[in-house]
Amino acid sequence: MTSVTIVYTGPVVDDVVRKGENICATFEPKGSYIDTPVYTEGFDNSVLQLGDKQSYGKSIYATNVWGMGFLPGLLPMNSTTAKFAEFERAIFAAKEAADAGQENTGVTFQVDGYEEELYWTQIARGMEGLGFVVTVGEAES
Image (cartoon, rainbow, N blue to C red):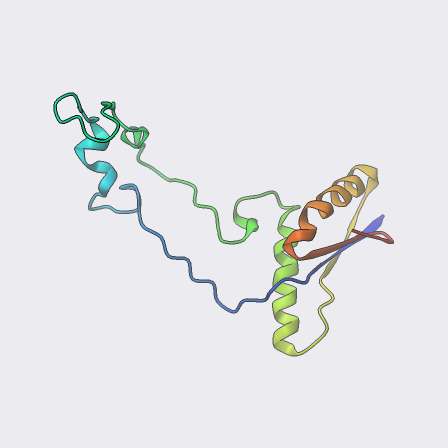
């Protein structure tokens, strides 16, 4: 067994507020701009000759399928593999340590086999620039 430790050294933010506009009726039950005729039926520009003077067929949004959709979360746990969620756990650990005035020791867990070690060694390189320090066994990436 090999231990993997992930420490998040990036900025710790108390609250993240994401504001965006709804683009489809799935999130806006009263309708939205993609339900207007220019999106659902297209636009014939042969008479007016506006802009690039081209006519367009219906938009991809006209194929809206009603039902449950998938909305990824702000952090990776909601939309990625369980392995990748360890990075989110490291962010939570950094926040908890900052709030308690303690040293941020990150999260540590055990992995089995060379395939797991290879996975964590490789992914560590890609996460460095995002504020993560990953140690696999004795080697820090």
